[in-house]
Image 1: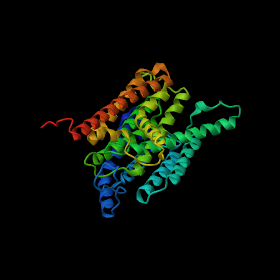
Image 2: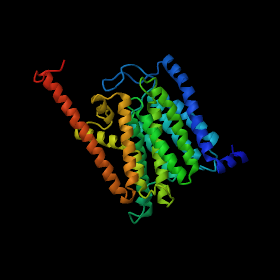
Image 3: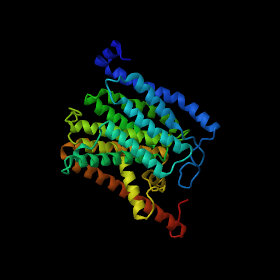
Length: 378
């Protein structure tokens, strides 16, 4: 691919390469998933088991992450020359480790300790080898070595958190895939306008794979992405976010039209739904003296289902909320990172409060009807 023709297209018609890498990734997943579904059904490789907390009442294959990973690697290797992303091998190595850990968890199950350790290894690879770190933490202490270790720890925790955050929102049809497509398109645009074309192609490769996956994951779902898929898109969310953040720290303009000044807040708004839901659930579990690793039905998507939404409706609501929060973050760029994050968090808390009040009222109405205090219509 590193021919004169390729670089001519790269110089004059970048949009063609962006379209090709998206289309190829889409095509691979679209035609591979039926085969994955067929094999999974024959081998009885289903989603764990029917738990009371699960929203599906029948067995569904959970190996969609295999097709996503294959499409991402193949299309990226075919279209992205080494010169555009010198760190390509490191990204793939870390991504494969994340994927394989998730795949083994899908097939035989892994303990939380093993998963966390593997995720921290992946996070360390990204932080050290790719030099994607939360660089604002430098010079907090007198010892530079200590500063570096603190930054490494915080960066690793951030990556591990996002990997698990996307795993936790993968609870209803279409949600994790839709949020994944949204952040991939956002980062693709921001990388493109910052001149980081290779990374823009990388994000579009993921977006194409996830778009094709949605055709099989929307209700009625034929396949789940599984932990291999959700861990993978969480890993790339962290990697893409850190890359863009480090570009902003190095004074690389992210967009002359949008005038991005508070890049950290913008990234936080793009990834806000999984971040907010994970923090919210962890706080609830801690206050209830329950292990943070114990699965439950307290996620926002579960509450929307309890409010009477279908899977598609809940997904659309959360996706539109995410888009709205990003719009707010873009509009308020001149306020600074902290102010923007406080504002979008306040909006999220308010919306969650409205949902909570509605659910409480709905429960009280049911109790009153059962007690004979209300006369049901009809």
